[in-house]
Amino acid sequence: MSSYDFPDDLVQAQHSWYAAYRQLAQEQNPAQTTVLRRTLQRLSVRIATHPYWATIPGRAPAARMALKQQTWAPDAEETRR
Image (cartoon, rainbow, N blue to C red; front, side, top):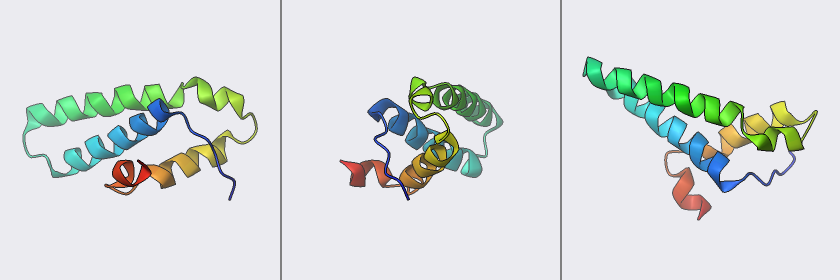
């Protein structure tokens, strides 16, 4: 697998996306689920439209998967530092 040098803001956005997703899965309060869904939408747009993807034409799908794998673990942000 290729190694990618993801910008910190992109890694943080993906990490935040997974954190919000996990919260949404456990949330019981309808008002809070609305907030979390909007957060996921905002982060999805930030991730999908990040300028980094234009720097790796033809390899973006593989890079997107690598980013997801890198940030999936709940403690991924802590181990990255």
